[in-house]
Image (cartoon, rainbow, N blue to C red; front, side, top):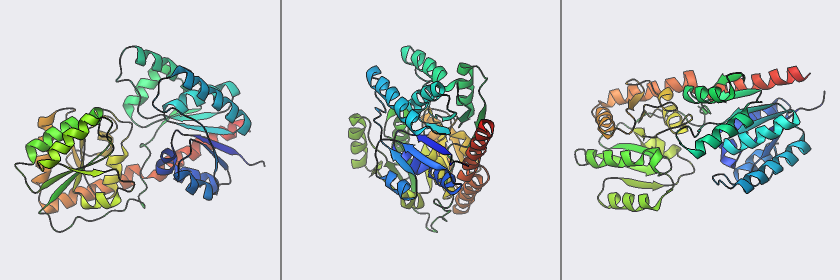
Length: 368
């Protein structure tokens, strides 16, 4: 039997390396030819050394140029036609939309996983995106949804007639993020913030909460990790750092040592697909205090493995931070273990890998 080919369409090397490499390796282990279409990044070298193939492509990830998007569509048509894959796996918005359009045109089965939609946008952008979603997703063999809100939103657009599976985000690699006990010394309490430093990730609420909590609890540390999307935040964070309110930890390629030092993560985001920040901290036994929104709440058993708070509500965020601070050391330990247990039950990345393998097998069985 001829070797089957699975093509991954991603917009950045870390999209496949950080969250999908287990699936790529499983496919290689099963004898598939695995091809990755992606702009070059160093993490691709690790994947190609393991047997995957890589083809280059130019993607303007955040740009809105119609001309650049038409060029991407043309690139995908040429690439996909030449590779002639048996199944295409599409991730992120442009890859899913334009890759989907080409696959539909070439009658190649494709699976879409596009977390992080633009339903929060209004006006012309949402009007355009809704139509692009319909064109790109309508012919999918399977839609993978990371939370209920996105499922309902997309299904309404594409007519509720496309097969779908609900998955726990990208899942979390439980071996890579092992459970780590808290230090016995509970005198200093560390809260991590791990996200781009931009408004919709809730940085304004986090900073406002830190300004209220820190003077009352000098032993509490708010440490921010992430890149600045807006220089105005760089100035504000620097000012608060001088006052001892927050600490800036920079951009870290490997967060595990910093998760280990923390007691909990605060994730006040406005919208998510399924946030890996919560999953990775929980896997290592660190509870989350997060916005009560789809994409965050699924990763938390409120009051057991962490806390949720009302979106954009600084008062509620402060209340939940103080609840955590006031827990005894034993209660914090118990909450951290509950967070790890939840990841083992519901978010093991192997669950996601197995769902993909099932869908790929189903697609190939229909092709004969």
